[in-house]
Image 1 (tube, protein in one colour):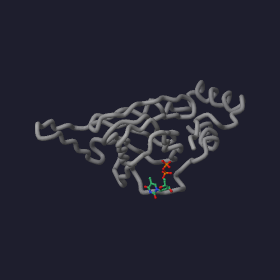
Image 2 (tube, rainbow, N blue to C red; image 1 turned 45 degrees about the vertical axis):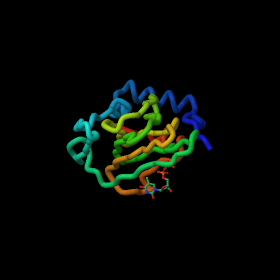
Image 3 (cartoon, helix red, strand yellow; image 1 turned 90 degrees about the vertical axis):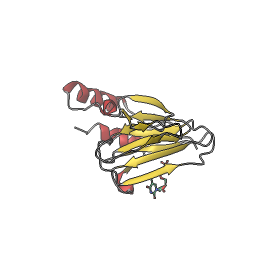
Length: 165
Ligand code: TYD
């Protein structure tokens, strides 16, 4: 079932507190840290080649690689945030949309190239959808799988953004 960002009981106080933090400069705009990263592309008539080196092309050491594939049309993946994990999301094949949300602002990015990727820093709620047929989403991650690192409830994530420095 599709989860929608924003389905949580936000109170006016949550927003007021958040924007006081913004005005005080206590809050780093995390969405701005999530940038597209261009990877090297060795163009060749026999087929192109792209490579990724941990600590070089991505701003973290790569400790894990996982990928989503055989995604049925209309599916949504993601729908969580990570406390400390850094990630690079690449459309290895086909295309899909990534919604990123730092608790203050949201942005949707369409990924459709295998020679660039979206860097997602910690404390970003993310959702992936609009997968094209046969698409493959590869994620390079800075740490091994750890369920303790997840926010799976948007409400918990949202509140945590209000105490971030
Ligand atoms: P999850 O990260 O929750 O993906 P999504 O939010 O798109 O559903 O992962 C789905 C399941 O796979 C979950 O039970 C945890 C497991 N998993 C691992 O065991 N190792 C991994 O590296 C990842 C990413 C997930």
